Amino acid sequence: MGNASSSCAVLSCDGPYTSFSFGGHDIRFRTPKNLVRYVDVREWDKGYLVVNAEYDGCPEPVEEYIDLVPILKNLYFDVDEFLAPIEGVAVA
Image 1 (cartoon, rainbow, N blue to C red):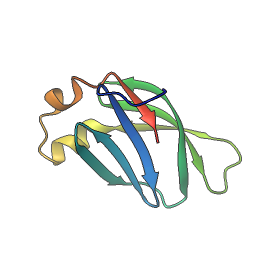
Image 2 (image 1 turned 180 degrees about the vertical axis):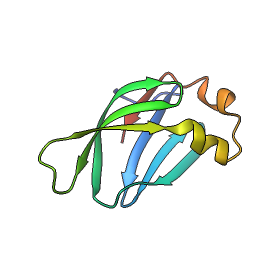
Image 3 (image 1 turned 30 degrees about the horizontal axis):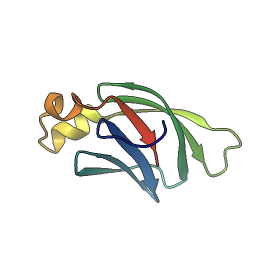
Image 4 (image 1 turned 90 degrees about the vertical axis):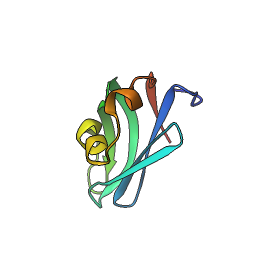
């Protein structure tokens, strides 16, 4: 995706944490320490992401799956309300 718009969330990683940012919220959760970066988002489906990720020690990107729904529920978000306006996800 090109420029992030008001309907586009942003996925990034910083050390052992992944950030999912949208609508003024920055949701962080732990990821493996050897995650270098997210290469691209292959699929976005109402809280479920399929991404390609680069890991230290792996010669090729690895397909990963991220389910945001349980994370959002644990943070007491109204999952449907939060996810409804998101049309896509860009990698930062």
